[in-house]
Length: 92
Image 1 (spheres, one colour):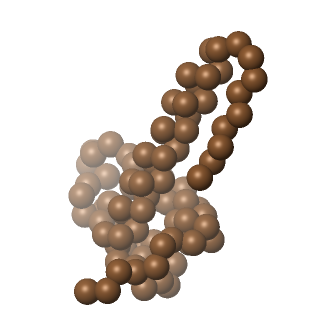
Image 2 (image 1 turned 180 degrees about the horizontal axis):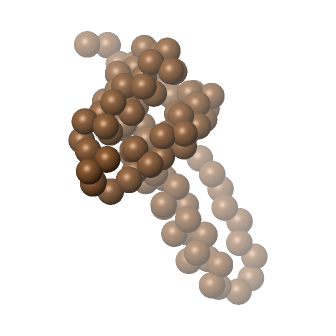
């Protein structure tokens, strides 16, 4: 199977927006209203809304990667915020 192209910034922003609209379903704790099935349905809705060639599993993986990068940057920011002197963040 051939490797797909990297996610573009527009694709990532669209994914962030779509997940934000379904935040309670996707990131909510399991309960009577939030089940594995409702979470899967939410990802399928995002898949259809984005109209892209990526699968729901790829959407979830990209979302997990975005969360991981965000947490790392936030941790780095908090670490350097407590220091004195100048702080410059280089985003890659």
